[in-house]
Length: 173
Image 1 (tube, rainbow, N blue to C red):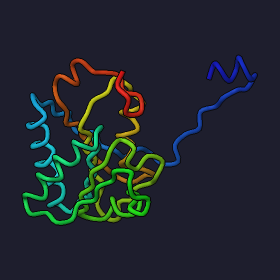
Image 2: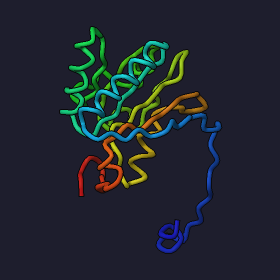
Image 3: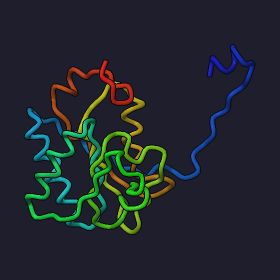
C-alpha cells in the first residue's frame, strides 16, 4: 500500500469479499513424530470421507504424499487423486470437490483455482506449519471459496509449530 502511494502516487482501496467466508478452522493437532502425524491425517481423512465430504490434504513435499498414499491404499482405498504437478490434465478444480474424493497434493495444489465442492463441504488438512502467514493463508484458502462452506485443520509436527522455519514457496530458509 505504501509502495503504491510513494513510488507511483496511487491510492489503494480495500475491496470487500463477494461472499462471507464460511470456512470453519478446526483446532490444530500437534504430533510428536511424522509417523504419528501421518496416522492422524489418515484417520481424519477417513472420518470425513465416510461422511461423503471431499478431502484435500496439502503437503510440503512429494515424498510425504507417497508415504500417506501408501497408507491409504493399504487400507483398501482404490481411488486417490494425487496432484504432483506432473499432469496438467488431472487438475484439482475439476475432481477434488467431488463427494467422497480423496486428494493429496503439495502446497501448489489448487493454487489460483476454484475447487468446487458439489454437495458436501470440502475438508482441507494441512500437514505442515509455517511462520509465513501468506503460505498458511493460501493453504487454508483452498476451502470455502466463493461463499461455499468448508473446514480446515492443521495436523503437523509439534517441533515444526514450536520452531517454525520460514517457508517461501516450498523453499526453506
